Image (cartoon, rainbow, N blue to C red; front, top):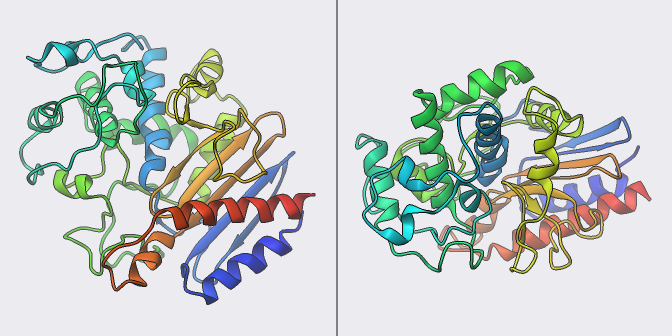
Length: 342
């Protein structure tokens, strides 16, 4: 396998300051190819942003269901004190598929020392955007709640749950919920001029003071590959075989995006995977410039890691950016990979 066209594209984008750090891994039919910028190796930290929703949160939720600790039909009033009747019966499944009616709102204060109950109360204080199950709107706040639910049922932190139930069994070596500002071998992915006050990119993660159920963790090519190999092989280290099919199907075919139980599912409207991944493929993106996608029929997965959002924002001296440029970049990269594989 050669990725000559893809490598040329990535080198050109580096030269044009679209990013200064990248890593791409293509796996197909037992063969893999990795290309990286000179300052990156398979253990370089990247802020995976919302990819953590799948790499960590939804996988641990499904694992907990498989262990009998949860059900897809469990409702929010089983875990939180809720007065609003419209929110009490929101289900785990609706949170996983972004159909709960809970949408992203900026948390209004620093929650680092206020505890999980205060975080949940703040998120649930906002009115629903629509009746649960009647629409789809991507919801970071819904996934923060899923992380809080995991901590409630396991009685340890999300980071400890992850290390015990995923990192250790899968042999993951460099995935962290927080890294030092001067961490070695780490791409700078936050989109601000300076870190504020920690090396986090997302405003609500900053408000909470820690990476959480919505994402914001740091990981590397090595660990993401290990995770995706476990998915491809339907490893019991993740959960029972039946859950792979259930997780990867599209539960929102009549809405604006295809969504599985955590995964983004490629449909006829999805463009970021270009022509490389057909309808029914699945994966997730991260706002910082990352993505992974998989197609079982083709025995194929692709990981793209960059710090593109930071560099896009730097072009305006950190005064704003158009995230659609990152989406178009992903499409372009996937199409070049297809050219290389053809």
